[in-house]
Length: 477
Image (tube, rainbow, N blue to C red; front, side, top):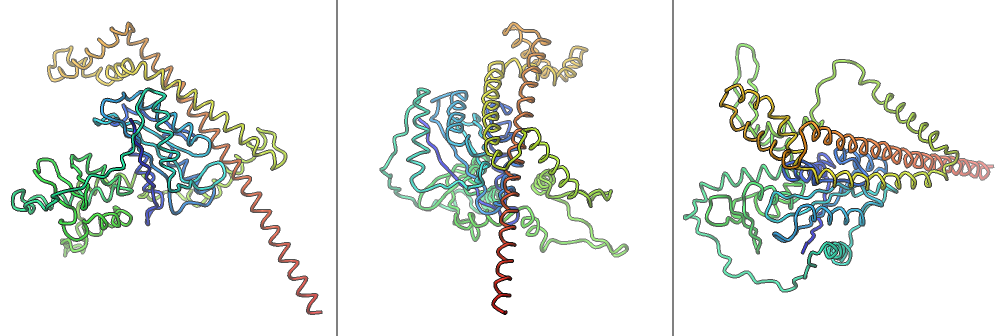
């Protein structure tokens, strides 16, 4: 049995699409997805999904408001393995999203309950319309579709429970027994850190769970950190920590606001000789988010050359060149021919995506062998030192020996296994490169159509304005 939950990803007041990027990065984490084997995408390059989705939003002028949607499909404990879960997720994505939306998906097998994540762009890359979720869509289309696919793979359907259990004896826990004054500050720090990371309340809860917190839902939301005996209600932590206040803080707070609150009122040591102020060191959390902001391009080094002045002109030239090559390659003479070409390109992308699925399935079959190759490659120096008598590397040597045993059991040499791994990686990289090229062509085609439409509207506006001027002159006469 699998149950689905659909969440929406809103814009952030400081960076409209930052929540979308955080969500994509979260579901594609290597440690949750067997080093990326349990991940995939449609209509976009997985590694560049955020950039692709952002480009689509810019193309159609819809960069604000709702940024995307996040569907979580959870399976019962021991109901299926990750391969079956991946097939269910892939089939749902191909049926529900492949024709119009850029989407990334992943299966997480690092918890007791295997579950899948699907994130898709709120804007359709085909025509710029936004995804519209109506009341009743979950039961009528989303969950029913999940049930049908689950049945296909021998899994049970969801039986919707309409009876709600009444929560009884939901009393406040004794504050003296579990030492709230000892726990409060640590709980608040963890909540503050997760508010900065989260893109919505659901991801905030996931962040706490990843830190070992237990969550209890009732009239009031309560949490219990590891080693604490009883649950602590959020609303008892003080101002700014109730469920509603946290939801508001998630939409407003980011690293900058966190840094301001840390720095305001902090003591500063002045050097009276030089008149300089000693810089306050970043804390561990601040360093982590400073690094994240740098990687996202929010913090940039100052350019040393003056080339940046011509960046816009260079981009414009490259774009015009792409337009020319698109029209020339597909021998397009009229704007009416573009939609047909776009359809042909989407069909090619569909074929490449199916080919990618086949390559992924083959790589999964050889997962143990490829993993053994990586282990031997990464630990070869340590293994060599151990063979020369350095006992420091005994643990690494054991890992290498185990990897060699895997190759022996599969009746394949290291050289052959490495060659096979490189072959599949080459096929996958070529596939991704072709999809990326075709997606860029689709974007170029729709941009040409958009510019043609804008020029027509501008021409009509000028003509209408000219007629109005002529009418006024006639009236004056």
